[in-house]
Amino acid sequence: MHSNHDERIRLWRASAVSLGLALYSQSVQADAGWDVTNTGQPYTDVEFTVTEGTWMSVDVSPDGKTLAFDLLGDIYSIPAAGGDATLIHGGPAIQRAPNFSPDGSKLLYLSDVSGADNLWVSNVDGSAARQITHETVDLLMGPTWGPKGETVAASKAYSTFPKMRSSEISLFDLTGGAGRLLVETPPNKRDVQEARFSADGRYLYYTERLTDPTIYVDGNHINYAIKRRDMTNGATEELLKGFGSATTAQISPDGKRLAFVRRVMNKTVLFVYDVETRAQRPVYDNLDRDDQTDFVPQGAYYPRFSWFPDNRHVAIWGKGKLYTIDMDTAASQQIPFRVTAHHRVTSPPRFAHDLAPEHFTVRVVRQLAPAPDGSNIVFTALGHLWRKALPNGKPTRLTKVQAF
Image (tube, rainbow, N blue to C red; front, top):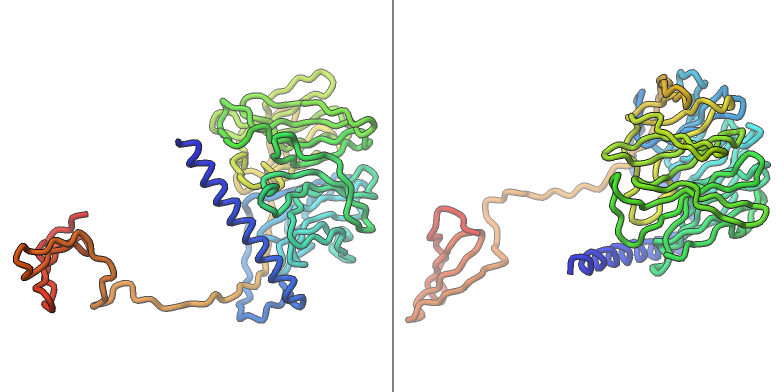
């Protein structure tokens, strides 16, 4: 009975999300002139400075000198050693998941400026931004560059109810188009996420959800696995799973080591895996909580992190900060950053409600008990007993203490 109840709740939530996406699509199509950057609503411009953030994706430039990261829906860059952040993409739209191109000249990212999450490419300074995909309803997530910088890939989740908990991985040309399928939806009809290519383009690493429908997020269950597909022949192998799952694979530039995330008891831990020997070991356990409990695919079970070109150090977010982690010694060093953020806050509509009026009308009365002679009636309302003379008497409260 409990599992059936849980499944009904899941189906209700899924239906609600699907209906919301459908209505949203109709709304966007009905008003082609809508602009997220200029909604016509009253607003206040605010400015504030922060030195930490939540759920930040970070990517290292190919030369190791620059970091790009997202914070509060904007994309910034800083020197690899840290410092004051430079705004790359900002404004009312949500811009996230930055990813340097293999030659370091371009930046791939997600933006909903068109009304839905789509893949965009710009110069590393934010100039010459252009939209690559043109989804209006279906969800694109986890963008990554193809190995030569001529293509981009992402997970795609459909908005229709039968497929909304599923996803697939597609490859897109920079010139546009519908894309072509790289990794199909698994047989369990769930999702594949977090695609990453090896530098030589031979392998595609990704995370696959193994369970359906129940997720037990602790160190005693196996919910996710990291898989590797050989792009020359399509052969796919299950590379990493085990208790606490394995997610968020990041292959080193030389292709010899894989950094990934696993849940160990109540901690999310950064691991390293030797591709040749297949040995794995924990490295750093002061990360934030992963998102293995997600119901509908969201593109990442831990924010994107990245190897430095020395094949030894990793830049990663945790507990509000950015860190460089030595994958050999487990030594960590904070990467300080300072962001001066500018945001436009739309003024929400406000309606006054008197939460404690002196008089109000009771809409629900219960447990009516008429007197045998029909002269009065007793009932409950607002947690008290009341008596009213029939037919038109004024109710009088009989109790002092509420009884529910």
